[in-house]
Length: 506
Image (cartoon, rainbow, N blue to C red):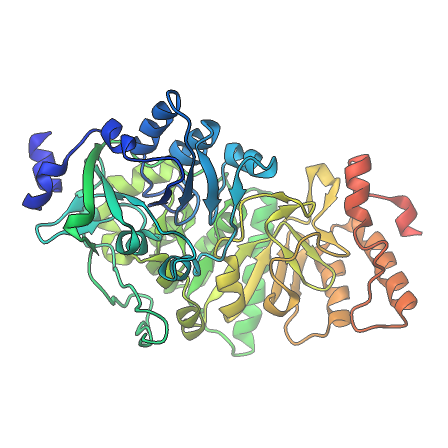
């Protein structure tokens, strides 16, 4: 262990600051604001949160926790269940914390992931008392080498009053050199971000540390919790084929080539499964510019389809993780991990002309998308980076199955119960039923494409009935709605357990 630690902790000034997790936890006081590393169960701190859980058994305290995105169970499950978290942001994906958010026990700040660093920089989030950051190594000259994500770690380290480092001796040495740490200056004094190609590097391999702010270093050997994505199924395979056929049509009319434009794929099983559809296609020399690299990206690299991938996090299932990290030298020169304010930067997304694929909970007949709230009130995970990409991408594509809960919920509804992405930011809808290309269309022109191509057949008559009645009642307004009936589908589901209502089809 001593030899391994010496290899990981190479800065002599910091070697005297190694402490136990319990001592580090003792520094955390009631009311503090913590900035923690981690992005979608990758690169998150583990042993200090577990020590905080033990501390909470002896004394009552609450803290605000800000991160890059969702974390593993050590924070979002165990800290939440221990009653330690008062406020959480900007994204989560664990059932325990979600339940406490929806019961009002935890306050949740849902935000675009590209915005968080600016909020910290401006002091709207904070002041941050402690940045608690996982590291794969600390170099001789005081660079913190992140592990499997970068997220908001650079801005937390820069702005926090004090820093606790979890030095993970189980993480690969080969991670050193994969990261590209570039932090923009203050707004108004900032140069353009000079990234013109997915593989460009702008910064340095680690996060510069103010050594005087480092209060302690805790040794960890706990690896990331594996992702919870589920395998592709018949319907996601069909959705992937619909998307590929849409892209083939774009090539036919000269808008794209077989190498497309850089691809972004959102977090989750459906987006991962749809991306995997490229594996057996004719598309080649692909690039990925995303926030998370999931299983599908590495399978596409193995298949020779993806040449290079840029993100802020690597989040893998146990099986794929074992294969990737067991052969990491095979992938290291094809990857770069950046701060999330760069991976999700609107300036770069627009410049590169991304094809963005994200998941919707529900879509309405005019193309508005709800990606966060179940029945308009219950938070699911958060908007994440989907808004960063959809608004600024060359193609903002949303995928969803046309139904849920065994067919009792239609994912295509008259009016979404919560709006995350307005019709102005949604270019294409894909379900297992088909594709609706909404570009250049007025609201009433979109209706037929969405209903006939994307809605489940069992709901199409009901949807047409709603639109026709609303159109007649309003005298053909620009976006016809019957406000008394617009959310009646959600009301019917709440009362009767289904959106199916024969009375609404007559």
